[in-house]
Image (cartoon, rainbow, N blue to C red; front, side):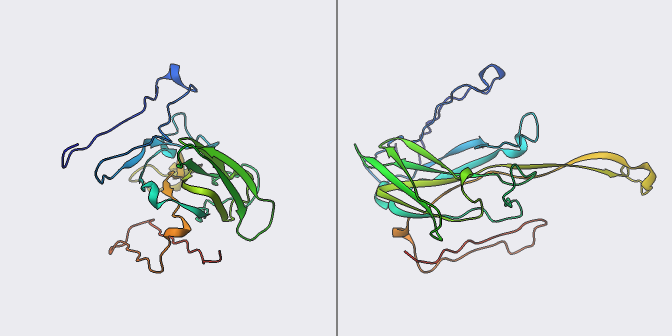
Length: 239
């Protein structure tokens, strides 16, 4: 690459009807090296991650552009904290709640050459038995949070420096209503409508404990935006 040039590498995904349900290539675990410092951005143009609530035939309302800047392996760590997305889509514990986020996924990447990494996962409050999984170098192990209490943070420790990425899933809540035709205020002329309340999936790197800092500015828009909410998760240093 010369200065100001960009190289893009993509995996083939068959989006035709005949290819539905088939295997798709995953670039996870690809090793990138460079003779000089470079920046690497990875992601998916229409990621859905996972959803048991399709919402529509195409599920477009539950798909989103998900990208993240990759950190170099010398900034990886061994201690991580996963925090659930805490909004009005947090489930209460009932099975398959309508319009609620059923799970989130953390993917652990093995980044130590020719080594198998052990990942230990435990609730931060110390309850329950830890889960232990392994991931090979150049491979990825999805740590599906479906079997965990969905509103509980988890402490994750690896025996070798690793990269962990959290993927939130899309949420769809279809609602039927009634409203008068455009320009009419007569309630008797109301027509049935179909509305949807959705949350798009997103992707974020889990910052290792070794990279935590004591000061983090949070910048928000200076003008108000309708139906726009911002939330901050804060984790105390207990380890």
